[in-house]
Amino acid sequence: MVTTITEGVKVSIETVYQPEYSNPANDHFMFAYKVNIENMSNYAIQLISRHWYIFDSNGAKREVEGEGVVGQQPVIEPGHAHEYVSGCNLKTDMGSMKGEYQMNRLMDNTSFNVQIPEFYLIAPYRMN
Image (cartoon, rainbow, N blue to C red; front, side, top):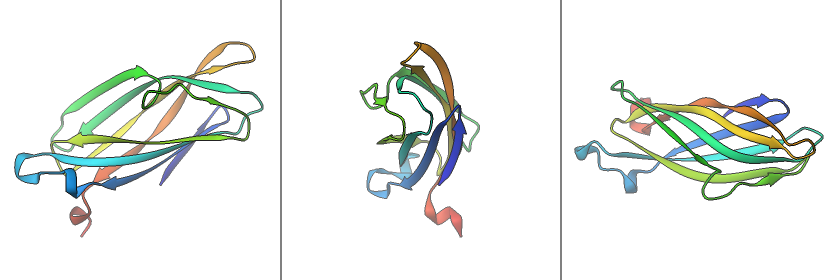
């Protein structure tokens, strides 16, 4: 698990290789990742958008931007968390992701960015 804290917002990520959805012979490797966003600040926040940087071990880079996460723009009250699971496919059995969330502080309508820590997507057989 990797974790980072930006302006009182803690982002933790765990990853899992998905062999049942992967096809290595066709350069298709599927990974799931679980994100926990914990509001450690004193004010309610809303997740507005996401911006991901995705890297394959062959040097390929992709960027993904969009509103919310998995179709939601959750409001997270102080002391609470929002958790979701999503996935990423790569053309190699190793890669990484990182990025940022755009958040909105509801009490004064101020926008700020929260860093998503870099995490690695590695098929377990590569760990030997």
